[in-house]
Image (cartoon, rainbow, N blue to C red; front, side):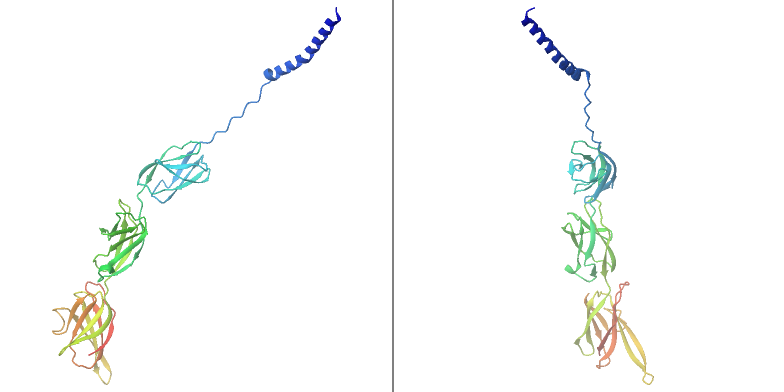
Length: 323
C-alpha cells in the first residue's frame, strides 16, 4: 500500500476520535437532558371590597373602605366621576365625597392594572346645612327696621335656602354658603326656634332667638307743666299700648312712731284709669308720659314701675324725685 494512502487513513482515524465525542455531547445536551421549567409570574389579587363605612352620606364627609387588593394608585369611582383615594394599607382606603347632586351612585374601585371591584350602591344624601350662631341672638320686641335684622352663621347654605322660624318658613336673604339673614317677625316675647332648610329636605339643627318683650325704664325726666298737672316723661323700651304704670308713694301715718304707709296707684292709658285725672299716654314703644296731678309743688320721692300685659314682664322699680 502506498505510503501516501497510509497517511490519509491515519488522518481520517484521528479526525473521527475528535469529532464523535463532541457530537455525542451536543446531542446529549440538546436532546437527552431536560431544561428547568420557567417560573410563572405571580398574579395580583383581585380588588375586593368587604365593607363601606358609612354606607351613605352627604358631600364633605369621609368614606372608608375595607377590603383586599388595594394599591397606592387605586382610585374610587362614584358613577362616572373618578375620585382620588388615600390608601392606608392593603386593606383600608378612604376618600372624600365632593359636591355632587343627591341620588344613588354606583361605587367601585379601579387599580392601575385595570382590575376593578364589583359595583356597590351608595346613596348620596342632600347636603345638610349647619347653623352655628345668630347675630344678634336677642331682639327687642319693639325694635324696628334694621334692629330686627338677624344673621345666621354656619356652612353649607345654598341659593334657595329658607329660614324656618318656629316650624314655618319665612322670607330670608342668602348671602353666602356661610351666611343667611332674615327679619325677626312680630311675635310674642320668649324663646323662638330658628333653623335653615336647604332646597330639598335637609334641615339644620335648632338655634334659639330671644324676643325680649320685658319693659325697661332707661330714664325719667320732668316735661311740660300745666295749671294743675305736669308730664313725667318715661323713656325706655318695650312699652305697649296697654302697658300700666305702677306708682308707689310713701306717706307718714304717725310722726312720733315714724310709721309709714305705701300708697300704690296703677295708671293706664286712655279710659279706665284708677283715678279720674291721672292717666298714661302711650307715645311709642320707647316712650310713655305720665300725667301727674301733685297735691304739692314740693318735690318728694316715689317709685314707678312699668308692667306689660299678658305676662310679658315688668320693669325694674325706679326711684323718682318730683312733685
